[in-house]
Image (cartoon, rainbow, N blue to C red; front, side, top):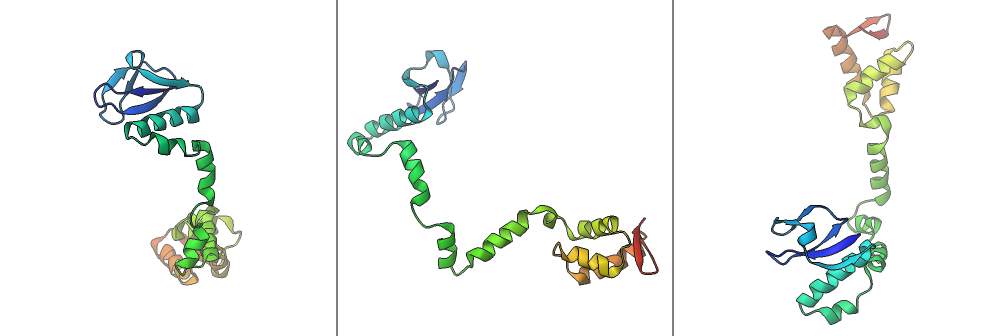
Length: 173
């Protein structure tokens, strides 16, 4: 059940779902016992409650006739997708390639590519059977980690004692 109720302090209207013991006015934050609030409209349909509240607000402002000419909320929400400029049109109009943006978005949200460079380096050492420099560089390149970073990282890890190198093969310690 949805009820359109009003605040006795500031006269705001809002929609309450169900029948809670108390509810707070979204405008002035006054707490009210739900059972004591005036219910201007009750219904089982949320969109109907939204429409009733909107009609009451329009009447308050003397715009009841203009509101009556509007389509219902559910019809207006369906029309939102067809109104205005699409994201691709906006990007193209701004001089940005929409396909490149889509590809960048996919890369940013796909699996391991969100890992840090150091994490990719350690992952390569853990997953590869006999990780030599070339294999680690190839593995890291799949995740966008530059080869120069991998080579310098391997050298630093060996000096720090976190990785050992024997005959060109690296192993985590």
